[in-house]
Length: 142
Image: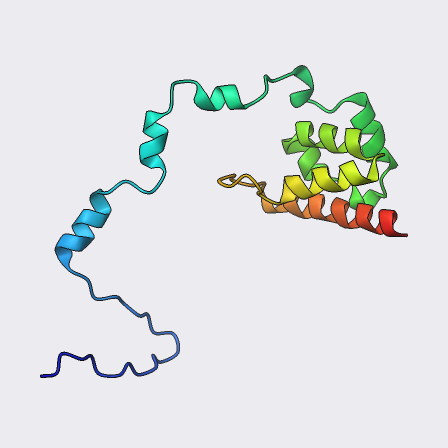
């Protein structure tokens, strides 16, 4: 025997490829902690709490200015799901809306994870924010 593997034939459509592995290697992989988990255990208590700003009353409800802003939007563009689930986000977007550069940046950062590890918004909220971003880009360019 030459020790070489025979050439791999293409898998039939819908087939599942499996990787041949050693049971000891598989057990070891299951017992090892994922990357980053070890570092989390070494962080001081309260680390994540200190990284976030303190909650304020407007985190739980729309401000009057945000309500006025939502009403001023075309009906099809109004972010209903985001207003209900994340009023704090709408308050931030509404406050930034009149500054084109700032509002584009705020919406972009709401949609895209530049810090890494964020869970993200539900799909309906993401679609609403993306529609607002597209609308603001169209306003800014035209």
